[in-house]
Image (cartoon, each protein chain N blue to C red):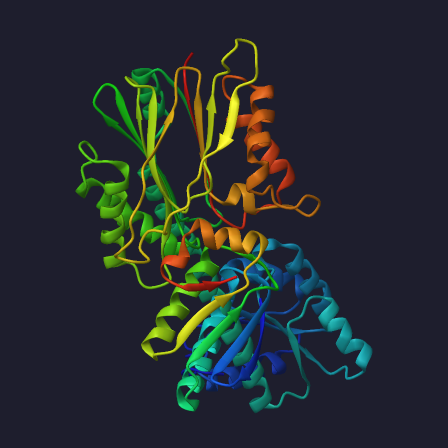
Length: 395
Length: 104
């Protein structure tokens, strides 16, 4: 085994044997290997009590004993979840195949044959103790990583608008705002935000860093610090994206990039102006010319060089009418690229109908039925992060 | 994703099949090694044949950007050839043609 040999001096071993001579000679053998913390029991029942009292790291267990034999004791140990992983080494004079198999069936980790050979005995004890320590270390490591990931996830969630904030902004601008955010692993590369720019204008940003997991999440934190550096107030969306692109190009290694949508909704002139950098096509809905007809729903062109790939990237502004009763639906690529066993992924072209179905089920808040139908067709856990934002102007 | 390599004249052709996505990141070193061999043999053109590729995700697009830079630093011209369907659509949406030479 790689690495320095494990010191056995802080390991505790319980010896269960009805024969005093055997107990003493086993203790002598393992004491020579450096194990000094040793307890004894004379049968299975005493052994079980000693396990609870002494908390050994390993049990050396005789098979044939009065009151309760070694197999019965081991089976009882394995029924108790606390001792499921406790190494149990049977010492047995029974050298038939069947008897030895019985030791494993009872839950034994390994066995040593009697008469005890000191070298073999110490080697097997050491092997079991090292394995136990490795498992322990791994479990502790895993637990620590999970704890840290869940802290990081809370931090990441705190970058996104809270429900209370959504409600505030919605009321201020006369909107319906609903959002859904789910990462594929504990952390993700999606980000979105709302930026009030005075009483009549609202900035909307959605960014998706390539990949997912920790690397992508770190990039969302980078992005968050960059956003505050570039005021949006007196700038066209295309200029703002170009600034963000240059800043990201400076910090992102080659191969990491982000897709983005940045738009400004101007309520005074009923207009959405946006620039995009390769985000999935947003859906724009405008109320029908004739009352009672279905709204006009279409995909917007969002092609554009992804952020952070080239310093020379330039972006283009587009303006679209977004009057009262109209809506904008933004989403990350997981919505159209993640599928299930029975249905393939939704695909870009199907999104307008997907929105129509959502509206048919809930005219005011279609995001929930849309998410329900997405999750109904998609295998979990998601392969990529999913963000979906519904912005509608109240009629 | 799987890839198959053929050499013709001064070009190396890498034909990709399957899906190029997040989990393929560990295959980049293999292709970079190929670039080293090309540089050693005096081959100057790397053609990434995508006509049989079914799907590419954002991580896959990122890999193309990495390969482009690796090729450039060895003075090898990288050409992405024949992307179709969803793959072509993803490449166009991200406007990679501003950085990478893409042939139909």
